[in-house]
Image (tube, rainbow, N blue to C red; front, side):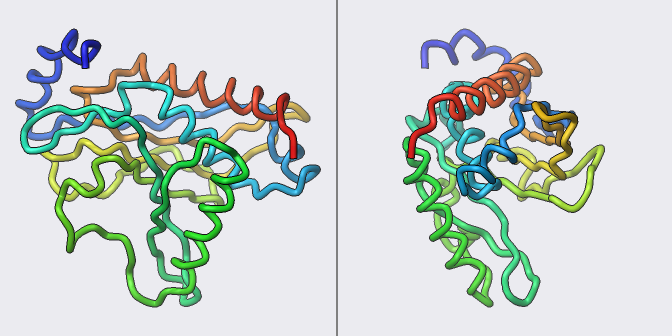
Amino acid sequence: MKNFELRRDRFDFFESFESPILNLTLDLEVPNFMTFCKREELPVFHFFLFFLMKSLNDLDHFKYRIVNGEVIKNDLIHGSYTVLNQEQLFNYTCFKYQHNLSSFISESLKAREISTHSKTLLNTAIEESSNSTKDYVFITSLPWFNFTSIQHPIYKFKSSDVPSIAWGKFNLIDSNKIRMPFSIQVHHGFVDGLHIHQLMEKISSSIEEGMRNFTK
């Protein structure tokens, strides 16, 4: 929390706003992991999701939350992403982050299986304490198109401290690079544009390192 205290006055400033939200949509360029995943028989979505969550967990600014009026820092944050069920209705997954790629993919696939086969809406946390999702990041994928902006749903502006992330179609630039539309919504009291830039750099370098050091 020492690093947070250095920006306490910035947090107090933005927390006084009716909407302390920073929402950016940008083009994210990363190494071509689609060819790698095909060769290694890895699910593309879950591979990218792992390195996104790994990168978020490596950067403190994305782990701060507000609990009972106080700022806390989670030791670890997890991802909840949307899927389509068999009736083509969206549903939410929920599972804990795993440090190992294979374990992460396994847990993510199990969570997807549960949510895609449920007709009822799962993992909304509406029936639970509002603090129950404070160690999560909300994620959606729109693989059908390239978007230039997005407005994430917000339950209450003043309590919008949990990051929301979306990405669109993976576009192959050349044999080595992929570009995708990427949107991130955060509390500006915790995260600045610089930290989003650092996250983009971290995602790209983590994917590159992960492919280089991959072993089955």
